[in-house]
Length: 109
Image (cartoon, rainbow, N blue to C red):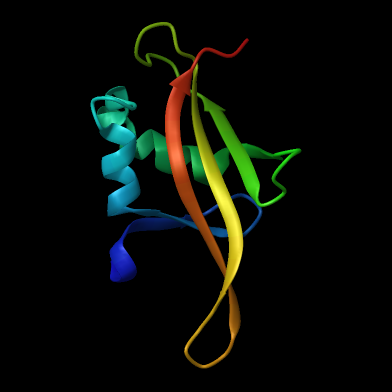
């Protein structure tokens, strides 16, 4: 994909959200969340199907969370943090720029 994008999907609200190769490598680094290596498709589904919650302190940040069976350890959900901003194109148009910053597994009850 162009601009370093690994993939892009639409969330349930009609917003395009993308993941860059750089962010995927960051997420799956040994010191971060290497358990996510086998769950890229689940991450994509999380963006497409999950509800989202806006961060109280940073209104540009949204937390997407979706339950999955059989995750690593005792985790129950895939969580993705997405920054929703805008950018200006070369033509001067303002367009959405929504991207995944990180993703991880978490036990949520």
